[in-house]
Image (cartoon, rainbow, N blue to C red; front, side):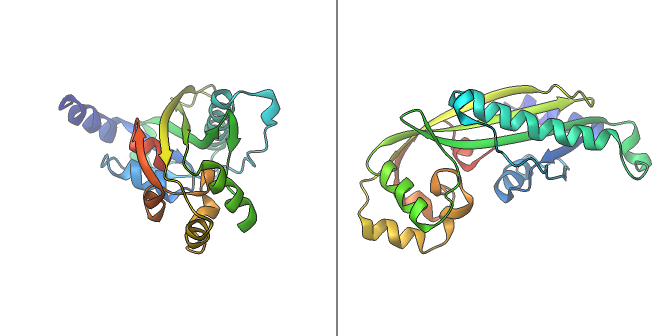
Length: 201
């Protein structure tokens, strides 16, 4: 693992890293590495037809489209690159996270009733969190894409507990209607897999 320190140093020296996301959680996770990066949010509406994909394929397609959109945008910059970036290799990272229960994709709840329905469906059960990550190196518009899965088990929740959680406002910008990195951790009894995957990188 100590070799990672050397690789991170190489990234700092040789690469221009761009995160194709406006998610504060992804920004926080990437910041842990101590590598400078820029944020350029894609405009992709995430409106793919779910019926045409299995969950893994869906989340990987979303990540790939986000990444490719930002690569294309950077291929035609409005302003000249600063001299400090001209010789660096462009690395663009796109990501998408979904919650999957019984092979059904749960994204961000639309409103309070939708969040209540989601959390009831997760109560007392195990589900999967899938994150697709797409990486383009050197401006290639066909990124390499992977998918990470983590199993998450919820406590049995009462309607009162669900309502109290929804009142915090947390569910509305998070896949599956909860965030494990904050108050949503109180809903979870166990995870099997990578914690940061559940947070959303």
